[in-house]
Image (cartoon, rainbow, N blue to C red):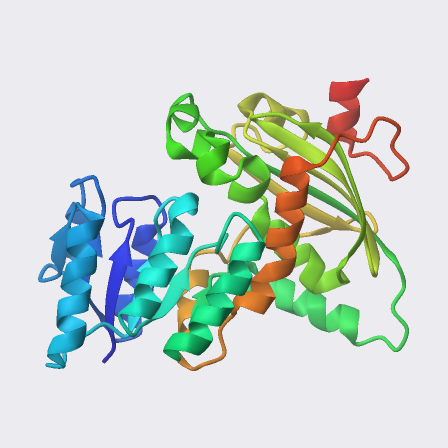
Length: 318
């Protein structure tokens, strides 16, 4: 049995990590969140120590690390806001633990190099959650793409719309300095997926960048991608034929829909199983998508597109 600690336990994503830790036969011994609405932990690890101050949490982890009495953590799971990921990963390494961190590992790509140096210094590992890479449908698509002798160039259309209320903009997620904006906060998993399937970027164009919408064109090694991300509920009925929905996700490959709306329930568990077996995703796997979203956050908009334009964007910039 491995000992875990977790940061950001009051957040949206934490229950998936708690479930994965429990199902893999491990336990959480300490948890951190500035908010104390963390009753969820009673369903998993009611005996875990809880802290609302990172300094006291850090001190506790250091103490149990030095006592060498079997309570020291083996892993620190990082579910805190994006801008804190880097600091909490470094905390894990300093107390002799591996880090398992939600994407993005960091907001700025150059911080990845520092984390790699710290991996070497402390002899520990930084892992991340690239859950779409373990989705059965996506794995089947990757196998199909790689089974051919000569890969043909694909035309891809990515659409991801997940509506959010006004609260979003008042939370850390609405602060680009903390979340990295929509491309980083909700798009990074899809960008990782596209580059994992179709290769690194050769050309990047950005047509729209707003607080609630973002879209552009990617030329990858084996695909041309038109993509659109949105938090606007009003965007969903324009493309959905299923009535009221709060989320719409779609990937088309040469005009054919890749259906992967189901099968998300246990993806974190699968990633944990792979990580605990030493086959998880590390810094280098995460690097391409972090570099891309950083570029999208800072680059100028393309005025005269050379690449293909997503239909949703055409409606907005016409």
